Image (tube, rainbow, N blue to C red; front, side, top):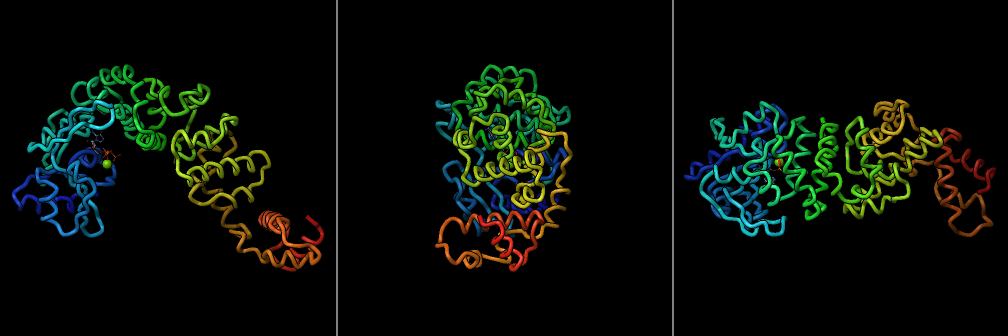
Length: 395
Ligand code: ATP
Ligand code: MG
């Protein structure tokens, strides 16, 4: 990340040589001071998007109206935003107007928390008008300005407070906390997609238990999609021991707690993608195969690699039986096949076993049975042996 910073400083230097100001701002400065890994770097400047487009070759106009463009440099992207202030927020959602300003401090004053209202110049000097550095040292999440007012402007900030607590292990300043408790209901004005982003970060945070405790303490949980209707699920949140690696894991877990609320209902309320919905269903299917039938090989076979960590988290929250990523990966490595395509027979071969039958769903059914039997080691993956087995079983 040192390397990322020096790269950002080069970009800043280029902006400055055109007689504008520019700083690294927000989360990157916070994470730098915390010695945490830095994912992306935001730059703030008094140059307008049109100026930036003149200065750099590769500029993508991602949000001109809000003053934001993306500068590409050596495979890296830097979001460059003109200093701005926001006003209005009649609908608790979008500022009625965005006004460009010439002063970095004014730009910092629109930001949510003191730890995020920091800027860093090219010489590593930190601009910190709201005491963000000392709050970082004291591990406190504190709203910039009047918390009540700032939360009414944008209620998503409540979710952000909780998710930062989950990621950083920080406490929320008492005045900010009170304001969250008072305004929690306003979260219902917020687009669920925005809430989902923060919710997923909360669930995956290293201090997830702290974040969830704060969620319950502030009453935010009573205003989250569908969760608000399921007190039992809310109560179980307290008992979670390990972070959930994904939203999908959460949805699968919630459904397993209350089977009569289908995954489709959770997915609809949280506006999940079809892929997420599919993954959640698969997690539940694999859970049942392992939990009810103890079929390790078949369960692991059905579980794609990208879902292993989610599965371990969900499974662990329901049982004391030890299960680890390593164990699953080990089983996966030793499976006789990894996909149906690797079977030593196909649909045509199945048909040849029963020349008297005409085409139909029975072919698929046989293939499924064969697949499961081969995975479980009941038959060898050998066309001859499989054909004998099919003729014997007569599905
Ligand atoms: P992360 O590491 O998760 O990206 P971040 O602090 O960079 O954390 P972003 O959501 O990327 O968070 O936002 C970048 C910056 O924009 C924040 O640091 C903060 O200064 C400001 N910001 C983002 N969302 C809000 C908001 N809802 N209200 C006020 N300021 C915000
Ligand atoms: Mg960020």
